[in-house]
Length: 247
Image (cartoon, rainbow, N blue to C red; front, side, top):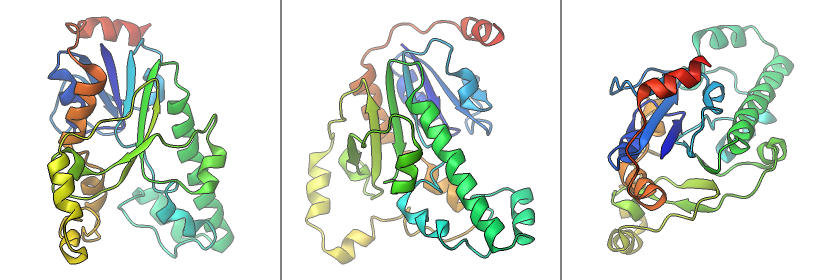
């Protein structure tokens, strides 16, 4: 099965599908961390027409779509950080007045909603998109929006960590939890002990926090590959895909 892992540079989900003999490719604006030759660099929307059997979106940008960022749509931040914005945006933002900054925040929301819309409505039979819980402004901007199918936690798939992840699914079943014993362990913890599992949430602010927060959990990736992919066909050659891109 030909699988596209969009907005992923770590290779976590790509490797999970490739391990089951699927022709899996990742795509991101950044080079792949594992230096794989099965990684496309660029806007993923340029590659949606290449005959994929499944589109998997590991972590599309969510800064302006998620509930935690909705407050900036009414009162913009006084400054931008390198965690979410490039140097040019940070420099330009410094010279903006309040109204310009507010317009900038809303434009970023529109950009994020447009990307989500293009992925959700991609000409691919099976689609999975991962993102946090969205606010109403984001939902209203997404074409053919539907509520997320399920939310999952890393501890349901083998990791002693918490990070709620919502899955929007089209043509795919919900994921079945793979480690119920670990889930029971978490539920039996005190509130204080549960905080020790919130590593991602507790990550210290800094330019590298975005990378840590965007990493996908291998246990969830393995469950996706096994439950949605099963035993893959022998992958078609790279030359075939490159021919499609050239066309």
